[in-house]
Length: 360
Image (cartoon, rainbow, N blue to C red; front, side, top):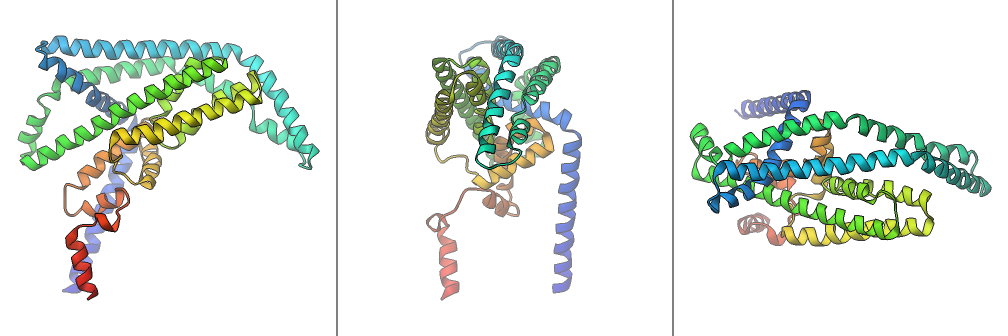
């Protein structure tokens, strides 16, 4: 009997593993379709509270929806126009920045060779290759039309999702015969994701504003471009704070001097520390409820499965997955492992008594 139960457990684990692998393969294969839908879903989650607020003010449904969609379209259009204009201006100014960067690279390589490093000039030139920036700007500008088309598709999906938002809980309850506990769990998922997205959006907006003011004070070119980049990359955990500061730091180095470059770097560090590590966790309360290691691994995982959209939505996707896993006693241990560090004081009293009894 023990051999049969052991064999059954192994077979069940293999079947579950195979099912997960198949789902991941299908998700990765359909990433071009799933990614815009997921992005639209999270935008709709953020836009639902303003829509409900307008409805509570007795604004007709279609007028309230039109107001929300108008705000989304205007915000996206203004952001796209400013970003494209700044990017084109940066492309036009690249030749002058290239010459200055090549000169500084050659000087730095010569200094390294003077202290004993052989072939330092060639190595430094390869690392700080201006052609990389040229290629990135060219690719970004060539993809503008495709990005606009994808944005319109996402906006259309958001409109339909907002139309169905009010009746979605009732449909799910009828379709899957959900209990009241399951319905409450679904609502908690929506609340948690909405809270995270709203707070993260406000924190990203504050980061972008502080970055723009600081770069404008220091006289760094295209401060608005770097502020928009900071707003977008602030949604990416860990690496976003580093990536957002690399372009303006290099630009400050070739445009002004080392002292200003250090001030730019210190400004970014101060903004990310105060907003990202102090204000944001304080506003969120107990934090994300996710292990720091899991946040980093989820960044790699969802980026591998869904591409760039997965990188930006790694945290809310993992939050939704954790809450879903916590719903079943069979999968609750996985949710606990994905969660934050558990101290002995936070352990359930029954577990402590059981462990002490076993010890006795």
